[in-house]
Length: 215
Length: 319
Image (cartoon, rainbow over all chains, first blue to last red):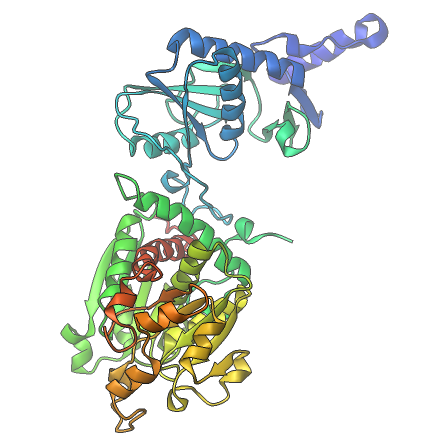
């Protein structure tokens, strides 16, 4: 099914004057990606900035001054997104103090002893109680949902939150192995299992962008 | 080249510090940092090892080490079985391999063992299939003690690299001393041993350590002094290594007056159990320069890190 859409799409593009391929990124809901391409930019730095601003606005809409809400970044890659959102929130609402922590899901993962690659733990730092708080959980890519499940278990050790919401930059659709869905989504992507969604940050030495990579 | 973080520990068992690389030790420390954070949570437990069974085999008496291992295992959610030689079939003449194989037949994944014979852990690792952690084998090695000592120095002074550490006391009979020398040297510290001639092994210089018989000179040189316990139980072969405990204490005991008279503030350590008034006096043990209780606290985190990292190498059994 997918392949036939791509073939139709490719022949449609070829028929256009000048051979200009329309930018598929303009479709916020769905990205079609031909199997023979090595990589595709899903989100460039300009769009990423827009998405972070939009997500921040949505958070403010739901949580006002963050007196009852806390932000928790998921180690290792979700922390980078959480810090960017935090920066944006602080510039939009300089007067409110936003509590922020990071959680490492490693000790709670369900695939311990199943890989050759060791599971190395990173820092968990939640210097406040989560009892009765609205927790906003932030990660960069939502795929199977298993990492989020592990992170949730880690967070519950710090008290019983009033609620937990999930914010992700990229949601890979139809790939969930657990009943976990995000409340705030930067962009939804359709992808094959052998593809990888990679979020890159300026902080790591490149530019801000999200790529879809073929194996 | 892959870093230790990408491939985990280079060993399947923890038999001695001698087999570890510097990056192994640093990986254990970085994971111990995370477990220390777990130990300071309201709920001090993680579920990582919920399908792993660990047997603690203590063929020799121990309070602190056994408790520390047992706590570490339980805080990782492992199932724990304990075994003390005094109440077992060992008394009926069973061999070490038979005893352990019987325990392994009950599906145990990891063995923590203390034994009075040097090399017992190495011997066992050649005969059985489980992961082995040496919790002290005779006068050979006591790797987790050395790791927690170096970790405590790193915590107190920021790093181990370039620090000067003196180990004072009975070096000949001490597995803590041997493991500490290996561990500190791998991390880039300078090591000195200090004690009466009878308690310093011949040719110890070949390990690259300095030797000093005068306690004051040794303490003036060092940043950290690790005061070992006089192990009377290992000296009962009829040989007298020093005339009396009182004389040892006068020559090699550390009291507050000596500590205060030094030109700089040194860190004082002791692997426990302390003979108060022999190796160090009570006021030194309880002073702000002593990190003896930090050592005990760090022991649980270090042992959690070691067990966690070794357990990753045990393949999950298909059902």
